[in-house]
Amino acid sequence: MTSKKGFSSTSVHGVGERDKMGSVVTPIYQTSTFFFESAEDGARCFAGESDGYIYTRLGNPTIDEFEATVAALEHGFNGIATSSGMAAVNTVYLTYLGQGDHVVCHNALYGPSRGILETAYPRFGVESTFVDTTDLKNVEQAIRPTTRLIFLETPANPTIGICDLNAISELAHRYGIKVCVDNTFCSPYLQNPLDLGADIVLHSLTKFINGHADIVGGIVVPKSQEDYKKLNYTMTNFGFNMDPHQAFLARRGLKTLGIRIDRAQQNAMKVAEYLESHAKVAWVKYPGLPSHPQFELGKRQMRGPGAMISFELKEGYEAGRKLMNHVKFCVLAVSLGGIETLIQHPASMTHSKLSKEAKEVGGITQGLVRLSIGIEEAEDIIGDLEQALEKA
Ligand SMILES: *Cc1c(COP(=O)(O)O)cnc(C)c1O
Image (tube, rainbow, N blue to C red; front, side, top):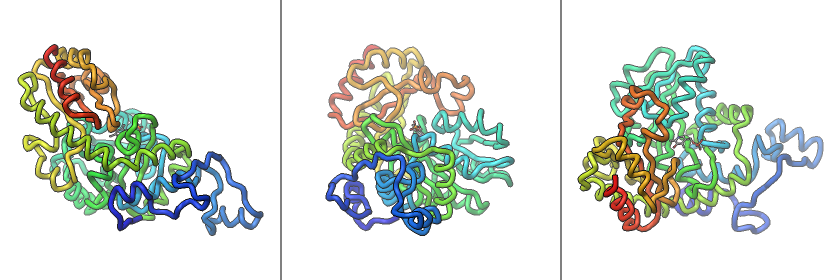
């Protein structure tokens, strides 16, 4: 799927034909099933000789239009929309991992993406290794003869570490291993992993792509038709499909993705600079700051630093807790990528169940705070952090 138009032109207009009834917006085909004109027509649909629709779990016009648009923005073959980001992750795991197979992952993966590999997949004979994939040497050392998949997040959650996608993909392909990138933190507006060598990209649409904190959803976009067929088989048969109304809302959110991220990352740069100069802050991790350990790599593979910031409070856990209790404007909530600024304290919230050791390995320090910067005025975000930091 390609589009010669600009990013926002494609995200607004899509890549398909205009609606035959004249609707400017892609309508919601709120139906579970589709009628056939005749027995022969039905037979052709089932044989794959016609592109007619059969049943919404297998395909639906509202969902199709959304999938094609995201695929065009990610430069992939086609999209496979799913009920959630985790359904997208499981679509990939179930497609490529079976009895005796091994997967290499970034050690600071989104909690449940790591959790299911540690608790559920071993029941099916799947083994996994978690390493700091921001260092290529670690990836090479973790590869085994049974490795089938390398699963990455960059920038990672919530440490903001950046992986070299070109280098990792080249290494993986030498061993015939597939590379999948969870691109949720960047969205296709800032990074296209398929152009950097990855085979599959996925998103939690819940975050930047929908962007309005009002639905949960996911999508997988492979580069090749062959991978598309395998992944689509998993999605439709395991029942990970999206619903038409969900697709309508995600499609609406997608239209403003470019301008939302432009604004949010302008704000994020100001907030990151403010925090870096604050006496109570030990360090700030933001790809737009020259102090970021992979600043140059970030500039090469991302079109902008994004809207996610992590910072460490010198006073640790208690200061993190106090900061959460004193913000008034920033919203104390997990998730990210919406139009409103969200703040959370991983050590007491999202990552509280991890052992002390696992926290250390994943970079979850006691005073770590994660911000997802929204599209409000930067002065209001900074003003709120200022008054709350005074009390922290
Ligand atoms: C939220 C998130 C997921 C899971 O998505 P859901 O829509 O919550 O199922 C996966 N990866 C990353 C990086 C996320 O932030």
